[in-house]
Amino acid sequence: MELIKKKLLQILDNFSGTKVLVIGDLMWDEYIWGYCNRISPEAPVPVVLSYKEERMPGGASNVLKNLIDLKISSGIMGVVGADTNGRSMIRELTKKSLNMLEIWESPDRPTTIKTRILAKNQQLLRLDREYAKPIPASIHDKMIDVLSREIKKYQAIILSDYDKGVFNPYFISEILKIAKNNNTYIAVDPQVRHFSLYKGADVMTPNELEASKGINLDIPETPEDLENLGKKIMNDLELEHLVITRSHKGMSLFQKNLPFINVPTTAKEVFDVTGAGDTVIAVYTSAIAAGASPLEATFLSNIAGGIVVGKIGTATVKRREIIGIVENIFKSTEKIEIKES
Image (tube, rainbow, N blue to C red):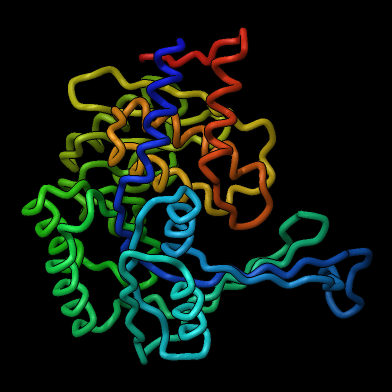
């Protein structure tokens, strides 16, 4: 057990030497916090008295935020609207010490904003302002050109697909081709509509619903169902490995020619799952780039996901928080049971 702990801590220490690029849909996550004590006389809806408003980068920029908080050398490529909110996003990300910041303004759309209204930590409403059609082909061509020139600086690329217009069949195929030609690891947090287009990626990290809808199967109810789901995705998409996140059930890892492995959640309480998938893929990819095996990367990203769901809002995790959980797990007399199925 001591050797396992030592290896996990060494992987986390190696994070400092890794370089990861994020490509994806950029957006603002906005939160309006308030009190709710009555129902509106105008309609059967709650009246919220606002006391605080927050705004933070979300979507692919939240994946980047996780990498920054983990002290990973990172860069980002994405698109915003040619508007005040887009320029604010660029200014916000310019403050970070990034390897690369390539953000294009698209005049045909507003910058995506997701606004959540909360009362006593309970989300009452989410309002989305967006235009999710594909971005202009001229911007895709510029992104491909930059990626071709800059990819050698990175060990891994994370594709953060929120289906807001950055990814389409052509762009995805070009990214995968460039990555394969440069032996660069590709991790994908997929959207259902593009699921089959990521054939040949190294890893995908869908949740159970995304995994099931992505290949038109029911959500698994038994271990056999889960095994069939994972094997079908692995075979159809020719992945090296697959991680399915399963909320309170933890995560399941699938690898070629090996039994799948269930890693139980370490979360004590779940307050908000917003952004948990961003944390999982950021930690998993960083761990692989830092020399971890798929199982070690799954174990660490499962811990990280358990930390962020215990926070309110679009949260991230810091390396010291993961280290603290690792230390506690291996100090405890209770063992975390990892099951091969």
